[in-house]
Image (cartoon, rainbow, N blue to C red; front, side, top):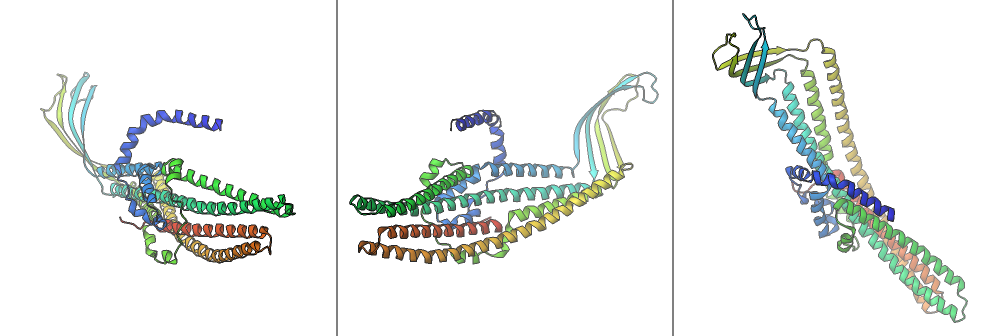
Length: 450
């Protein structure tokens, strides 16, 4: 424990200078991209009926570092797109040049010449190379916009899964606590009877063994609940103590078949991961076009307007001076290199197209697996509910017979343990249904307001 505290303190010390130096720039980058609306992702947690989930989601969208990182990446992509578009327009620079030599006509001695003014350059995009670069940048921006949304969707899905897991474990813990209380009453009764001279040693040991197993199971559930809270703290940034105080620990609502049947299949088109893969394929296609266009000649125009001054021995035109020139350039001795670059770009385009097809198949498979998981959880829950009803009746009958002296109270303890196990299974199957529904929403993409 002491070592963990020291490591944590060291991490904070080493991280502090970076946080201080970069905080202003990080805030500026995050603010450049508008936060995504919370209600766009509400399908992930609406089935929980927990208002606190929406509050946590708003905080996640605003402060989660994984989402902020993708927002900064989108900001970068937008800047790249703006820069690529500028390549289609003329470029105007302030230019100053100075020379000293004897290369001027009619000059025998070295003379000095100084020029200054404005120089404009414009490349006529005859081959479409510049337009292809702009298209690639725009596709890259669309990809990063989709990845930004996908990152938010993934993080909020993990948050919703954490909320479901926490409530499921809380329900299981309550069932085990009730079982432990009943078992303690049984153990107290057995000890009283043993103190009264009745031979209850064997039954007492059986009851103690059952209680030890139940207590171990409760400890496991409590540890998993703590793990769930730590995971939620990582996602939301909310301290564990506050989460413990504010999380809804009520039993989960019963999943309904209509949840799944009401989801339209064409909603899959909105999956941001698919949109990102499609945009990446478009960007790769544009880059392949650009690589092909590089092999063609390019035509550029250059204009200059300014003034000049030189040595007395130079014959200079009067100020202001101006010129207009055109240049045609074509690759000559590097054709093999350019061809290799084009081949590589085409290969990357094929990879991107295959990746898009793979993403579509993955999304369809994830949706199918989620539906199967939901159906499986519903089937298990129905079976466990039936078993729980029988176990509850068994516990009632055992208690009645024990009160009548027909059976030992150890049978009551065993019936109580069976009932607790059935309640654990019902809670787990209920949670599995909610988790499968979240997985389905994750595979389909956000379906809230745009």
